[in-house]
Image (cartoon, rainbow, N blue to C red):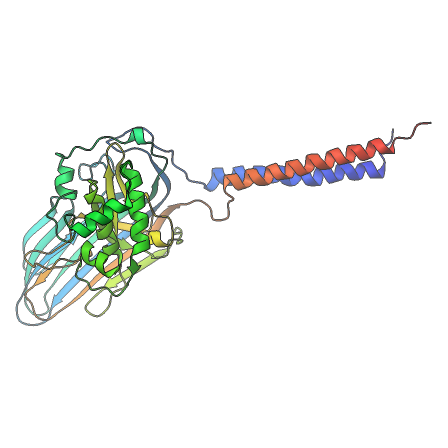
Length: 422
């Protein structure tokens, strides 16, 4: 029996429908193998940290250069620089912390005229690391401070934490003394208005994760972002009363409302490479930031971490949560400088809302300084922008298969009608 032209058309039609399905499936699998960089989810407790998922990561070279030149008379200077610490589960400095920042300090150098009382790599009670030094300078003498890091920032989220996986708080733990106390300035957890507000947001049966989500949502909706806030910290109560603030006030208010619920929480300060959450760093991309007496383009930022037993320190950004979901997740765009209490420079009593890594106290009247940070992407492991999510691929393939089967059934019915009996 010969194959008629009509029957040939049927098989050609089937091939044209089937080929895109096969081609789409193979191209998608190939794309995932070659470019997709997904870490396995960690489900068991490891160093007191669990249930986090590293979704993407970017590795940067970070070069820090600071120079101060004294211009008149004699100047006595005190410097304090915060390090970009490693923040990993197995780090002795960052207990119960997921791998938010994998940092390697490759060079650390201080030089200049009349340096004295130099302290390299000392830690405060929150285990932040600093390099501190003093200098007495005459006219045109200077000091320099240089660092080079290789830093991997991991995008991390926590998903589907079951109530049974959360441990029990131990209020005698050092964590409560540091991050759930009544004495820390700007976190007024004993204020009646804030106590009533916190209790009205959460439910009595909520676990710590559920409480944190409700508080994060409430803070993001309640406060209006104001980019013209003063440099001086104003605290949670002032932000609550004024119903506005910048990233520091968003963080302070969320931290205070969490502490009222008996949940340890702390502020994290650092800087961003971009304030656009959709930024996707590529190998070779560079950013340069500069601070001097007249100008700065540093993108200082603050966010929060709260602690859940057996889960660890969970990060949220209540400021960015206004536009994008930043509850229980963090990105690869921010460098961590300081955690814990507000950063300040002894012997000055000034408390800054941003963990400023530059100098803090100076007796000299006239000086020039430059603080420069150059950031270069050396490795970028991101989900491809042009790839379809798996559920979209499955939906498209399934739809095409259904259409194909329907066409085959219709064609077979047509063939049955063409049979002629003699």
